[in-house]
Image (cartoon, rainbow, N blue to C red):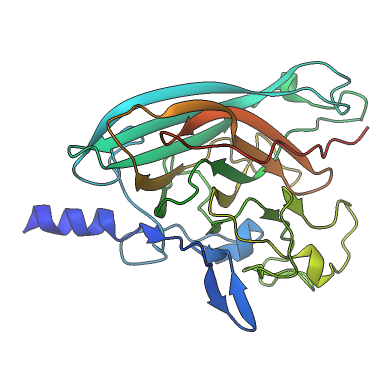
Length: 302
C-alpha cells in the first residue's frame, strides 16, 4: 500500500495541456494556474506539499530521479546561457546554465523532458556595464518547443527548496507580462491571459519600467501546440535583496519512440518580461521529428 500511495503522490501533479486551451470567463486561455500563491512571487509564496498548493507539483527524491515510476534516464545535456546583443555592447556575457534530463518508459512510447535553469550569481553576469549597478538577467518565463501534434502533460518540482514555484503553464509560444502587488494584480494584468486578441510573438506586455495599465491586446496569448511556456521567477539578485538563483525542474511528458531525442538550436527560450524585454535561445532536446519555429524574436534594446 505504501508503494501505491507513493505512486499516487508522484502522479497527482501532471496536468494535461489541451491544444484548445482552458475555459475562462468570456473565452479560453492557453494557460492554467499551478501555484500562484504570493501573487506570482510578489508577495509571500506558500510552497507546494502533498495535499496543499500542489497543482502541477511532483515530489521526486532528487532532481535526477524520474518524477514518475516506470521511467528510466535516457540522456542529459547542459548548455550555457550566453547573451550577446546591444545591451552587452556586442560581447558574450554568460548569464547562467540550462540542464536537461530525459527519461523514457520501458515500452519506448513516452518520454519526460525535464529542464532547470541556474543563473550566474557574480558580477561577471552584469549584462549592461554601461549602466550603474549590476543588471542581472531575470527569467520570468521558460518556453520549450517541438511538441506539435503530440499529447502533452506537464509538472514541476521545487528542488532546490529555495526555488520559486511554477505560477502558471500554457500551450503557447507567448510569454505574457504580469505585474502586481503582494495581494493583487496591478490594474489590467491577468493571471490567465485570454487567447484573444490574437498574439503569437515571444513576449506580450508593456516594455517599460513605469507601471501603466495594459490594453487587453497586451495581455493575450494565442494557443500554439508546438510550445509549452512555464511562468516562474529566477534571478541571481533582485532589487529587493532576495535571490532565486536556481529554478525547480519543469517537466513535459509526451509521446516518443525508440529514437533518441534530437537537439535543436533555440528549442528552449528564456525570457525576461520586465523592462527591458529580452529573449535568449539555447539548444534543447525535442521529440524525434520535432521542429522549432518561429525563430527567436529580437527584444534587445540599445
